[in-house]
Image 1 (cartoon, rainbow, N blue to C red):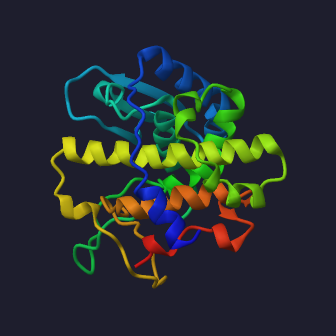
Image 2 (cartoon, one colour; image 1 turned 90 degrees about the vertical axis):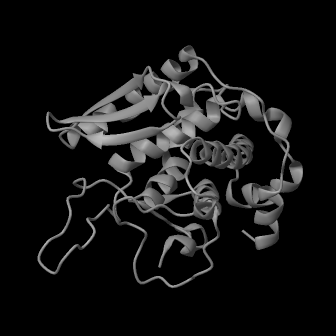
Length: 261
């Protein structure tokens, strides 16, 4: 993806004014359960979605509980964000499942002393890998089962964005889903930006990473890629038309260098 294409997309300012209801949330979570519950069960877990009725800042998070439950918790205020659509929530929920199923690299503890490492979730994929799983695997499966998934974003489609999708996918329906996912990915980053603002995260966190070194990933506890890096990860996952385990068959659309240090 060229930098010009990425910049044009980041500056694309027409937003869907939406928010979704509990019925949409239940449709998404029920579909994700039927898609991934057996896979998670084969790994020794039991998938559970919890909608937390609270006025807390909008958020979603994944955790492996001691009783074997692999739980995705969604704070109810996340549904009412005006930037939220069914497809953006789909990508966010897919990201959370990606913490369970995205594979390596996993979250690691921060080295406190030579002898002590802080506790970290066991085999939970790091944030960048969860993002990559969200669009390279999960949202593609979700869109096949929910034909109306992208309906909220139809007015945002721009044919000039379709070139890469047309090159990577032969089937017209796959090309359309690719383009729709690119639009939804942009919208999702705007939702994440709003979430950070609601949580009073310093604006510096939104900054750009300009570093192509690849000696290790952003995989320490609490470590997130910047928003533009997360968006590039969504793009690469979308444009990856074939996976082997958790990596893309086409190196061009592998995990982007921006979330390596």
